[in-house]
Length: 246
Image 1: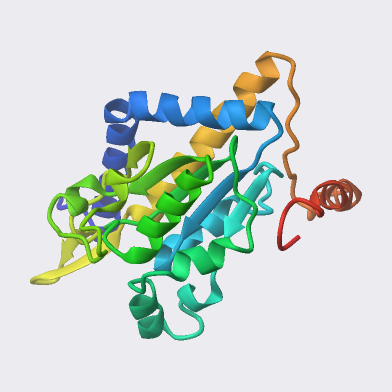
Image 2: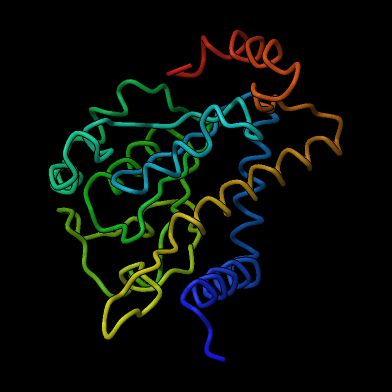
């Protein structure tokens, strides 16, 4: 019997995650080492993205099962809810990243993940450049298959993966949609699923490595678990002066 669309989608996602683990092993190790060093030295992990990539920044921020030292870099104008088409146009605007970053004290010792499936627009490219100029370690989370098929929209002519210290390939198809449905419709995007997996895997592995060395890292637990609300409130109090948006 032919596989259903949901089975094909599941198989595609699993195949991508397996390829990420095998083909990106060295890059994942390097990213984990950078995060481990940052957390061990009391620095922050930042995640930036525009359009649907902003979901990855929200994923690590104030997250049950996530580290407290994670800061989402968010610009409401690039988060779709104030106008989806407008967001698409604004992420191409040169100079916006610097204005957004002015509200975040990224500096030496910090790690910044910049998520962009194509990596061709001004916002992620300039975000990476600005964070790198401040001395932070920058990590692109992008699709190399997509990036290899397009040109930059930035004045430098460069793509995101060309301006960061490290690159993590999300394993996605050109155009992100990984399934052909009906006669010729492309659906089933994978960049969010893969990106969330990569980020959470790297952060969890870093915390595990630190724990093995006797270093404890603040990790949020769900405030909706029985008896957990007080602990969540205490965690917020500890980090409120350092993390924007708590």
